[in-house]
Amino acid sequence: GNTCTHAEGSMVGSLEFCTGKLGSRLILVLGHTKCGAIYGATKTFLDAQQAQGEPKKAGSALEGLLKDLGTVAQQAAEEKGPGASSDEVAAHAVKVNVFHSMNFLLKFSDSIREAVKSGQLQLQGGIYHLDTGKVEFLGKSPVQSELLSSTSSIPPSMTSMVKESRGLHGVRTAADERVPSDAALKMLKAGNQRFATGAVTAGTTSSEMRKALVKYNQAPHSA
Image (cartoon, rainbow, N blue to C red; front, side, top):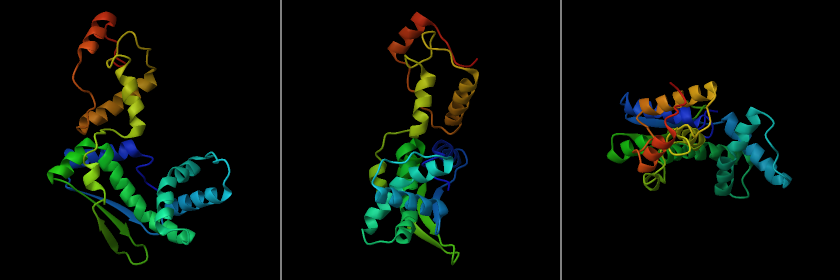
């Protein structure tokens, strides 16, 4: 399954590019019935609850995917109540995951939030029903108005990369360790993607940053 829980950086960045540079005015987060990833995640979550032991570590990428969707399965189970069957919880989890993805976009994208605030962009959800071919439109996220006040500008998985690229003083100097070429290329590509989509994270140059540059001199990770 394509989820914001995993390919979050590429998904958010691509949507920022579409709604910014390309001028798209609608994002439709579309789930579908009988989703194998969601049903698998629900089973994994419910089995773990019944086992009541130490949480089992993921032994493969697939297991990691299912385990990380556990919050979606947990919310669905709580909303359906203790009497619901595994299939009923999984079917509801499809809807929960749509809103979860919508909320993620609002929480971790400055440009998407601003476009929604200004009315230039609509963020809607829907479920494609495999049996009938019809799309059930869910509308906006129930917590959209709350999430529009978020101040996060980058997905969690990309935060450490940004901090690393900025160095100890908020700007790379000779006081920082040298960056291996493969890591430097990865950081360069990530920064270019943020620049191209208008999601830059660098702020203004502070006096501390200028003092560090004078004391240690520049040491960019790429030239």
